[in-house]
Length: 441
Image 1 (spheres, rainbow, N blue to C red):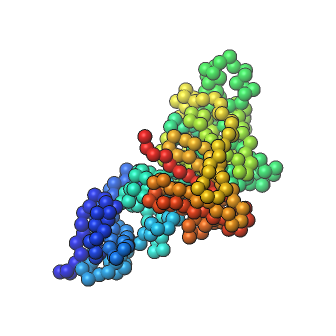
Image 2: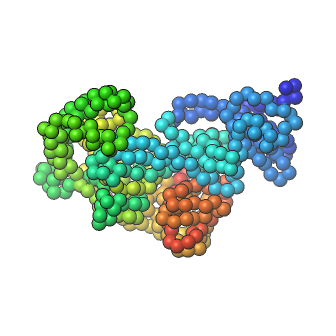
């Protein structure tokens, strides 16, 4: 094709657009994408059309397709197999469902080898790393978004209990959106958080308890390892990958084939370990701030929305199943570092929008804070973006974010270059969880 549009290599698509508003015509801009979190560097093509008073943008994976110089924006984008992006409206987040031994996580902003979330547009989806790399100012010039996900554990005791783990740097907050009625008939579930005051009182000092608990965990780990070896043999016999999550029904069948003495030994060792651990009751709407270095484990049948700093680091103290993502637990290091109790205060500060009902700041971390606002029908708030992106999730009802409808547990992002964000309820009572990042220091 003698007369084809050239691919222009640029370091930042956003900056090219900013400085060429008067250029006119269609451009193919190629930018390399370096995403360490997912382990590859790949070029992306932006199809940019400068028209009178406006600019249209589409994105596609670079594949060296030749585009006629006579092509308009839509034709060029179609030839490249791309998707148009519209920053004038909030960007709806497309979730990824990640299987876990205890149930599933539902990611909204996750970017890892295990899954890359995206933004929904009319013509399809666009991976989050594309937009963060090509349009940094629209995302507060941050290389990663605050991590939003849902923890959705199985309703079955033990099988639906999460890892008892701690974090050294990661800050996270849980908001309870559902408590399984079969698992918790009175509507009160729980989270393992820190250690029992009555057990701590039996020890002269913190180190005495840590030594005692380390011995209890070692005993349980030995039994757990024996079970994992036998169950791995059953996985091999049935052609199941040794590190693949399987359903609770399959696990129960395998466990029923184990020697009864070993099953009883595991239950007793687990009971002794759990005796040391404090359980915080959780009901619908409760908020739990997870302090760094405090071991915690959400319990079966308690579904939560989680906001956290976008780092992957944890130390596993113990787990009542085989850990599929690493060979060994981190018990020794975790017990050395761990704090024994969490601050249980719930002093929420008031948050005033530029218009509408007041919200409450349910957590204020170093890198972000989260506001919860409760609406009645047809109420709305106006939030000033102040050059920061805003993530909004609807809980227990439907919301309008600008012109975008969000149903229960759907979420979207309003870009930092938007002057203000309007959130409106529709029918009945509904809550919104609003996450706002803080400037990097």
